[in-house]
Image (tube, rainbow, N blue to C red; front, side, top):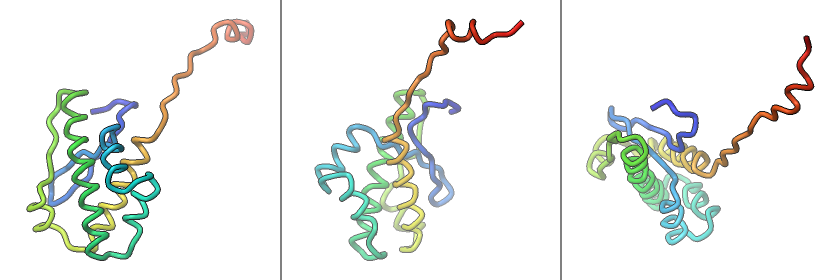
Amino acid sequence: MKNESVRMIEREVGGKTYPLAFSLQAYAECHAKFGELKHTTTAMDMDITPDAIHNIMWLFFLLNEWGVKYKRLLFGEEGNLLSREVAEASMGPYECTEMKIAVMEAIAIGLKREVEVEADTKNAETTQTN
């Protein structure tokens, strides 16, 4: 999938790659759970505690779900959906830091604005030299 406008990332867990996408619906679900977006990131800024692990995993699973849908709907590709069982069996508590970084990166990419710039042919003609 090589497209400049891809709004997702992929991360490896337990030897498989999982897509993460921060979609409109993911935003709505984060807002329902945490309130403002800044509270979403604050929920992961805690030390590695059971609550922080729970929030990081919840966000990772949510963004993974929307990443799978993104790949299927926009590119006709299948994506891996991470199960709680695989995550719990293949990860230790401090690997949640890597998941937190992936979640933050996916949120940043999902919030990124895309701006298309068209070349101004009128100005291009006047700046050309013979």
